[in-house]
Length: 288
Length: 237
Image (tube, rainbow over all chains, first blue to last red; front, side, top):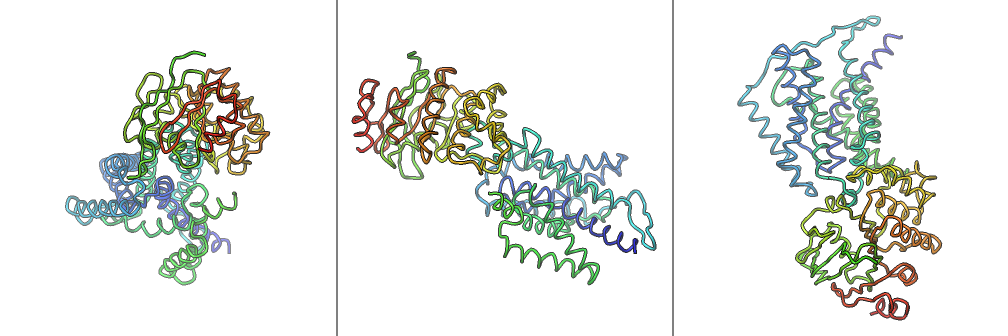
């Protein structure tokens, strides 16, 4: 009985971790700037490839993963400085531009790196509970997801950057009129969002076979989580992750993986119908 | 009164899209003055304020602040040079607490003088009581006090207030007028405010510019301000 309960809890934790890690970066960029970043998967891919290449060159895995996240963040800042900053308040253009970037990066990687790349094994081995065997690394991923949420809370609620970033998010013109360098806030936030996407890729790198189009693996879950959570990463992403993880874990357990995926999409349709601004929009309205 | 100019505006023009709104605003404000900008609805008062802080670009003309041309500077640089802006409708950050609203301005200011926060709480004790409360849940008068306090912690040399009495009960308006006079007297801050409320204009204005159809059409000096009919006449032009 305990083993079954642990198995369900483990699966929930695994799905929750995947949703949170995949969505956190996208949620920050969408919440801060209203940019729907179609190149999100490519930042994740960047994190994966940098991590794997670093490990294959003898860099210890945790350091390689940090390198993957930082690399994606730097690419994000460069992209914001050169392209994205010209597209604020032009949401449709930003979708088109980031989608174009996504296509160029994916095809460029196919040409330069080939269609597949040798991966690295999953570390930490496995452990048994009853008749079930579990990957210990999946617990690390769950811990990382909780850590990301806690870190984002601390960054946005307890730092000067967080105060100015939230002000910019709520009323950019007023924040600017008070002296906030809003362009810098946007660049840092885009970099942070990209770094979190890179971190997601870096953390999942040991669990995957590497192909240049692997960013797409994360895209559906990340967009579904952001749509359900709404624009506020602090208020929306964690509740959305919990809700979607419950739906997916239950459907996975009863009807298999495909049913779990369909369940996610049905949930997002229902949420859009009932809560058009997502969970965080609903909570914000209740607060007011 | 010192005569050193804090703000000099010359032939300022601005437009929303292709529609010109300001057609040549001229004004000069000396250090420590409290000056009002009056006129009917829709003649360009708020647009002038948005242009002065930099939220609306000037199409032509000059804005000189403390001897430096700021016409081309973005709003955040103007704020850091020492212009505090209290917009129409207050525009506090509704989902942030009172102290976070104040912290935004403090963190963005070059001096980051935390003593100014204590000074703001002295001027407006209600803000200290409500410092952990979301700004969106404050009354209109409390939000106006917060908007003024938020600008004050940036240590402005010039404060721009857009209709500070709008939608606020008279007792709070009186208190805000007293605080603005104290700010000028204690900190030497120059104040330019847009107003339609005759009592507020008469209570603190030392001089008045009248704007009509996007241009300054008259200036009312200290002597003529003592005659309320003069101001009333210009509000009804």
